[in-house]
Length: 74
Image (spheres, rainbow, N blue to C red):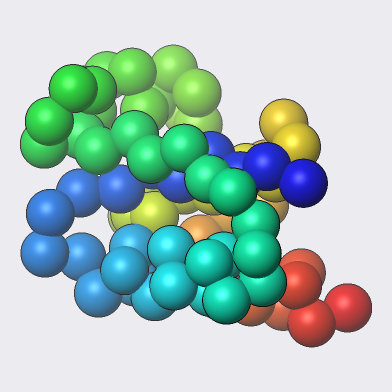
């Protein structure tokens, strides 16, 4: 399983999402909109995005941190 995490600096939910993925042994690619990526690129990937993080698992859109936590519990 591989994750894609759209994030930004100083985002506690982004940090928690990455920590959860690491604790489950799931590799992830981070796309930080403050560094090498833009908000426009995020909105191309997730047009409805209003908050961060925005997370995909194996190419399937999951949602934010809460949705990720629920998804990984099941």
